[in-house]
Length: 317
Image (cartoon, rainbow, N blue to C red; front, side):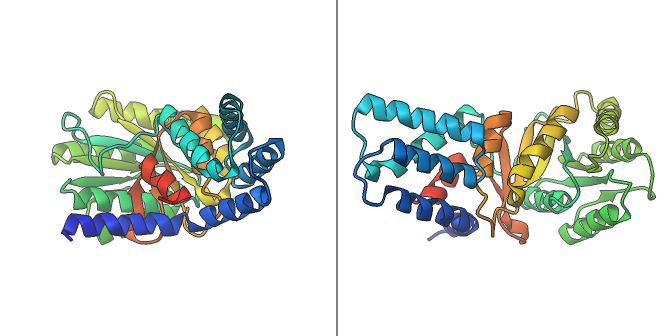
């Protein structure tokens, strides 16, 4: 077995372990729902609806999935309960495809956009700064040079935490004093990255939601200032959500998508929770591609989201 195969196997094992509780939650309930039944009927579909909702897939997305399964049952006239898992798997995979959650390159950035500017948003406590540190590590492992910008200047802990990650990963962190203008920090970070021919610059931002107008103004100002250094940046606005909070993650997504144009999602803390269905629901409801998923504390435990591998782990090979 080659080094690449060993690496791929380890990633698969991490994904399987991270989704284990969600998988157990869905399958234990699904097994009870079809016990003693030979065909998929209204009662089984009602049970399935409840299973998906309680797995934090979300009501609207659940109803969409149920409707599709109903159409298949009506078309095929008879669908056995032994086929239900296969059909559910196919419909979820199709849904993820429709919602642009397609496979992306493994921690790579376009050659013609250097430095590639990523602005990271999300409320405090979702693992935003940790995700930035892990992203920086993965990019660096792929041979890319990375700069970090500590633009969450309202919390000393945020700047300190990013600084620690910078030292740990071995990448420069551009920062200013506590309470400095976040846009000024972002400007300096992008400017430094450009001057040093860096490949990637990742900007951390404040995660306050108490006033959406202030948040919107602040994020807009940061974007405008960065685009003065490099036109049409940021190239990506990455929203970090805590998957273990279930429906609360939907609310956070609503606030941030209203405040700025989010282009990609990172859903963290999927390990140790039975709420992994939130990945499916958020992808469907917001039509924003899920780009990364967090499956543990280790630096390698942030993975590029691959829909086929995700569905395989959720439903078994």
